[in-house]
Amino acid sequence: MNHDEAVLVRKAQKGHAPSFEQLVRRYDENIMRLLCHLLNDSEDARDVYQEVFFKVYKSIASFNFRSEFYTWVYRIALNTAINFRKKRKKNWRLEGVEYFAAQNELDHIKIEDAVANPEHNFLNSELSLQIADAVDQLSPKQRAVFVLRHYEGMKLKEIAKILQLNEGTVKNYLFRALEKMRRNLHEYKYFQ
Image (cartoon, rainbow, N blue to C red):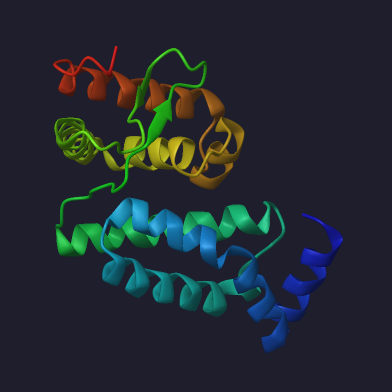
């Protein structure tokens, strides 16, 4: 954690509202994007976003600087989204699937930019739905690892910190997620 952020956190812990607002501004877009990917519903994402930062505000005094502040906030966001999903029992969907790749970029799907060809556009939208269905079938941990890696672009080490797992376990979740998706998407030539 850089010095400026540590100062902001310490001030926010003492109730200094402008410092807390600065911290929120640092992470609000990333948290909202993460929630949109996880929940696939902008209204739900906004509701959970509010809940996340309310929880951060209520518990910032207990932040002990053992991890990066962003790691702590992401952990709160993931847990809140998982709990929201359990309560709502909605299908998790991912919109606008453009790209995901394994760490070594051996396995990948790429949906090209839409072109004037209606058949191509239909196939892209159909594949996007199939990918969303495949992601829906992942366990919560696999889904979290997958979304953080392939939609948030985080490194495995960062994901391990956020989920409080060792890096090997994160790799295992990612591998199993990709294998499960490969089985579910085997009919598509884009996924090999």
